[in-house]
Image 1 (tube, helix red, strand yellow):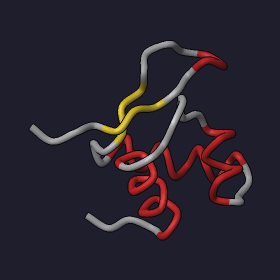
Image 2 (cartoon, one colour):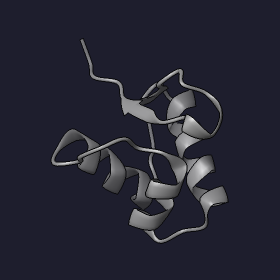
Image 3 (cartoon, one colour):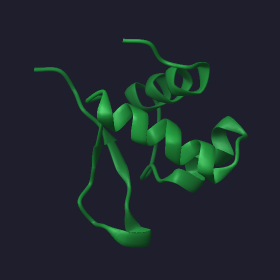
Image 4 (cartoon, helix red, strand yellow):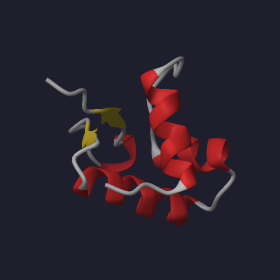
Length: 69
């Protein structure tokens, strides 16, 4: 599976010292991209099975790293 540089950075952040909830605006701020780009990155990782939607929905949607079994 291929990831772009932003995705690699955020996967490492989430696997390491990340504190709080991840949402698209936080992704955008950390990676210094527009929120639309952040949403595309997140959607791609969800399709690849790396991130999961927290299930809160709407503006409260946040994402969690899916850990391997």
